[in-house]
Amino acid sequence: MDDTVLIVGGGLTGLGTALHLPAHVPWQLFEKDARPGGHARTECRDGFYFDKTGHWLHLRDPGIKTLVGELFPGDAPGRALLQVDRKARIFSSGVLTRYPFQANLFGLPPSVISECLLGFIEAHSDPHSQEPAQNFADFCDKRFGKGISRHFMLPYNRKLWGVDPAEITAAWCSRFVPIPKLPEVVRGAVGDTPPELGYNAHFLYPREGGIETLVHRIVERLPAERLHRGAPLEQIELATRTAVIGGERFPFRSLVATLPLPELCRRIIDLPAHLVPWVERLRCTPVRYLNVATKVPPRSDYHWLYVPEEKYPFYRVGVYSNAVPSMAPAGCGSFYVELSDRGPLDVARLVPEVLDALVAAGILHSKADLLFADLREIEYAYVVFDDNYYPALAALIPFLESYGVYPRGRYGSWTYNSMEDCLMLGREIAARLSTPSSEAKKT
Ligand SMILES: Cc1cc2nc3c(=O)[nH]c(=O)nc-3n(C[C@H](O)[C@H](O)[C@H](O)COP(=O)(O)OP(=O)(O)OC[C@H]3O[C@@H](n4cnc5c(N)ncnc54)[C@H](O)[C@@H]3O)c2cc1C
Image 1 (tube, rainbow, N blue to C red):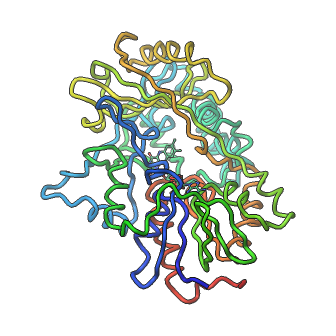
Image 2: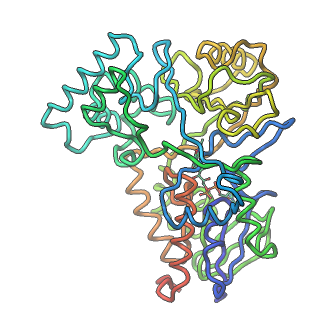
Image 3: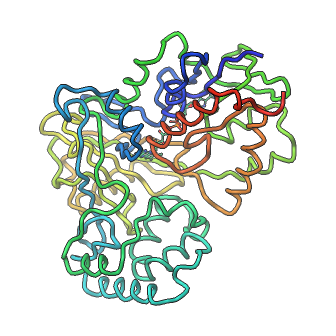
């Protein structure tokens, strides 16, 4: 059996795995596209740069911070990598408030503030409020109260995930949804503004070239002859531990699979029949977004805006050029607009409707600011954490690992995570495959 670790997918998980494997472990990485980077790629049109919607780097792990620092050595701090203090806003009830909604009610109409405050107080005085929640909607009601749920948490998350929050389990959200204490909510409601809350109060970003610059910096460190582009995984046979990639057969002991888990499973020709229904139950919603360029600077200085109300056709708008000036030519603006609608789209109607809403939200001065708006789609965007989620993963992942196939990454592990998490997953699996105990059970 060949000891070479096969890595399928050249996104940050695959690249992170390759980067962390020690010299004594041979590896080959296969990426189906011509360019590595996956979801962390950037496109450029006429000097405007667009990621696959906002891709801001939030680092918390000391090892990954060191790694990113080494990837962007600068002779002055912040030279190659900018550190940006988040300026996020929420547009609701016709006004802009600070993020997160639950800790920044100040500025909303008095009736909304009192509904939210009273709901929060009521939820907190309820002895059942700290009990495990049934689902994400219940989590919001229990932890934030009915008002905050109704005005922000439920409508926003319905637009973001593309499914009703009652269909989502509560388990995923503790890290990503900041829960303020009562004094913080009260201070936020009267404008005695608390410090920035949440996991993303600051972020890092390459000074030039969009987030794909991070990908380039990693690729530069890897031996080019081991990184194969235009090389799709077509088939896996578990019994013989053989992968067919770009028409060629590769025997393997270990294969790190970062393509979406259902796509991986569909390529396994001897996946046992009893596992197939679990594959079919894995759900993920796509996201469509617009890359927008304007011939004048944006009207406001914030970096992104959350838009919970259903009457607007998007749930989030980001202004790349406010965060990082190199993302647009001088005197212009570059934006991403994440669309709520997952059904059929009438693009001719959509763009004017979006522009009207951007003007209403105070992002554009007028429709005439527009240079171009390009529609894009991310096929795999948000994994749905429904009731089948945990049993499906429990059935599939240990089984695949017992044959030396390690699904990893946002869509390999089938999860909700960040770029940093993907680099960490790469580091973990690299460590596991570097030690003799990594031998999988079945031969
Ligand atoms: C809308 C959105 C916004 C986001 N915003 C942020 C953010 O602000 N900050 C942040 O940190 N993270 C953000 N993320 C998350 C981040 O994009 C991901 O965590 C990360 O890029 C995933 O990396 P990955 O390598 O696991 O997967 P991917 O990037 O999907 O890489 C998988 C690779 O496998 C390749 N592949 C697929 N099929 C095959 C095959 N058959 N054979 C060979 N190769 C194949 C793909 O082409 C791809 O290159 C966001 C994600 C989304 C969807």
